[in-house]
Amino acid sequence: MHKTLIGNQSRVAVVILNWNGWKDTIECLESLQQVTYPPFQILVVDNGSTDDSVKKILMWARSRFKGYSTFLKYNIQSKLIEENGGIGEEKSLVIIRSKENLGYAGGNNIGIRYALKHKADYVLILNNDTVVAPDFFEQLLKVALTEENIGILGPKSYFYSEPNVIQSCGCKMNLWTGRGKLIGNCEVDYGQYNRIMEVDWVSGAAMLIKNEVFRKVGLLDEAFYLCYEENDFCHRARRSGFTILAVPQAKIWHKAVRTSIKPIMEYYLVRNRLLFMKKNAPIMRFFFFFYCYILGTSVRLISYLFAKNKKSIRAILIGLLHGFFLLTDKKKNFNDYGVHHF
Image 1 (cartoon, rainbow, N blue to C red):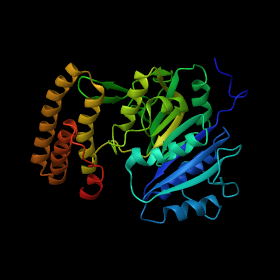
Image 2 (cartoon, rainbow, N blue to C red; image 1 turned 30 degrees about the horizontal axis):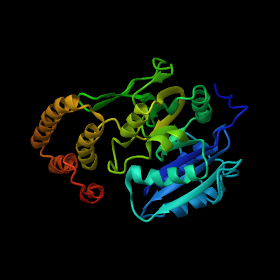
Image 3 (tube, one colour; image 1 turned 135 degrees about the vertical axis):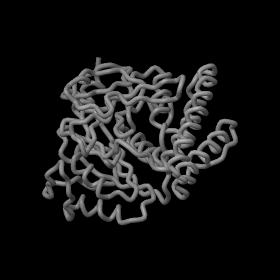
């Protein structure tokens, strides 16, 4: 058993990826500023933004900028300390700039490497379009420190626009079909998921990860670029003996949408579902999955044909093509394709 939080405060680094989304990022930072658990360092990785993101975030950090939020009351008197050093005794902010958009996996890996170099005990990957509860860290770490093999933890996530409707409370994965299920998705919360649960994976919107997990299984797989990378990472961790838990007492609110999938997401979901199953499914399950994959994708294409949705049809067809290239080990980098073509 580990010591309690009072006796042993863990050094935590928070990695937030920003891409032309400074308004969301500032609201997320403000919610972190108000949490009850110190110390932690926030690493904002600007993923090749083409707007004023870095300038605006720095203005906020220097108390020269007040954002807007339906969730929070901004405190312009007390902001994060800017610094360029390691993880210290106070909340601090480091901004790391990437010259290009490296996707979810590549951008987060920049922050993860920095955190590990500066000896963080835990790394929290947090989407910039989230708001966290004040006791968020305390609830996660209280559970994380109870058992040595607990490697990854996720909170209960709600829809930002519907604060009492669950987006997910952990996730399950079917390695026959390659489809994941968000536990509690779109259900009104009346306490039905209030117990800590072992799950297959947790949403990449918020993942608290012990440093030993990275040292044993590596970083996020940048071949995915966007979609399925957190699922793949969690499966690698589980195969290495780590437990993954959903902790519903820790809460966030995520600006996710219930419906509609953009063409860029269609592309990565089709392509990366195939890549994920190639990496993680046993051979017999993969053959069963492949049949379901072709059938399901065909049905989706037909539905878009009737709807005359040319962009989504094109995205799925190109996703299929690129997925087959990856399946046959033709090492091509398609990661930048979707950003510019859909």
